[in-house]
Image (cartoon, rainbow, N blue to C red; front, top):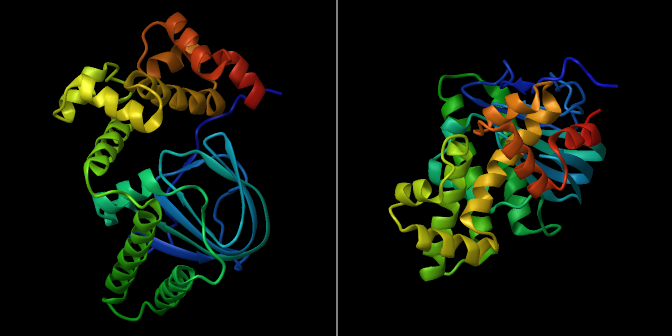
Length: 286
């Protein structure tokens, strides 16, 4: 049955968070302040370090299944929920993205795979365990004004450690390929920010100070798809979220994602997803 009250719920950081950070031990059964089994967004980043257990999540309409040890990183724009968890052990740390350098945040968003699987008893895993445990213990202290500065420093150390591991795992060349990857990732970040108003490849090329041909060749060589497809997919992803979480009409959703013509939007949506907007809503929600 159709739910007349569907909205995209977005949750803020817990009021228990101090200065934009909170860490939760998965073995603590009384820490969740909202229902994480239902799809939602958060206005902050979440990093899960699973030490033990099996997990099944959904992130932006894709099921993610894994067995620990593993890392999961979820960003503010992503719709997600827990489907099933068995014998979880580890930590979930939530933090305001403003606390993290743009370089590290973009690296996490562009490079980390969900899940980022770890080798059992690896040195990297041991280091993560030490830092997470230390952040939890320091968070419980809160005995002087410098405690929160200590937690901020520990968060930076944790994320820098993860960033270093991601770069090492990716084995990126420091030459021409690296420059191409920077262009691709900068373009993808721009699509997330400007998909509603920037529909032409030339707008992105201009922002990156390169030619349209160079942008298209670079993006296509690394992803297999031209620039125009990525621009469309950014709009379609937001349209999927709105179709699922709101009762807005197709026309209203088309406008929300930057298309004045609902008919054109409907054809584009079907081209990308193989479903009409209403078929998508019925399949995933009604």
